Length: 318
Image (cartoon, rainbow, N blue to C red; front, side, top):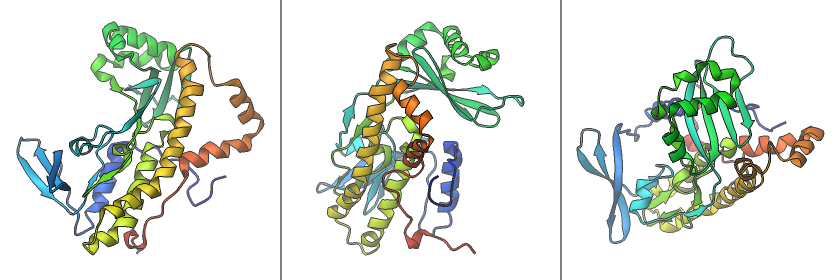
């Protein structure tokens, strides 16, 4: 039911996506990728950000200077913090714990699947050779899980995913379980002189709906379209950075508002034990009016304000 050429949602491991972007970037003469290099802070002159300081894996340090620094370094952005930009936090009822379990040839019917059992729920993602699994439960539970130890955690997973109970021993210890401190926040101003924050650095999204990467890519496309001209002409002003935020602010607020509503209506009652399963009214409505499933499909696959790559960024098919 969705418009456009692509009638599916692709689930791609992050490292494969990053490798693809790096390969595409190599075709651009002005592109330089520094691996194992961490941005440690911003460089400022006369109140203007003029680049970043960095540290390599072997401990060497240095500076990179630029007309514009784009902070795309995630929800714990060191660049944002160094520039003194502080996001507004919204309450979140859940955290996530990621781990893997092996997938066997006879495992069928399990692509992207949600599971629930009482106050716990999980999401399994078929990665061909293994299942990537997100265990979701009440925020703040991580110290308890680690104090209980791996045996208790295996028991939780076996109870929640009985079809995978015969392989939970592959979780060797709690270091195999990665805690994601779920955050939902947004900067009041995404920019300051010489610096623009996009993606999670500007607005950390809940994992609900898996739309954080959608918003981040759309931010990047809008940034390229709006700022390429001023950058090439060396006429970039802070007002140009404000245009990016104005363009992307409304869809960001809209998605976060939907996520906050789902946190309050769906997830908080679940983890508190006040309700089992989806709200009955919502389940009934989606069952009786299948066409309504178009709405979440559109919001996840396309979003409130889709962005198109500018002409100069599109290569011909030959």
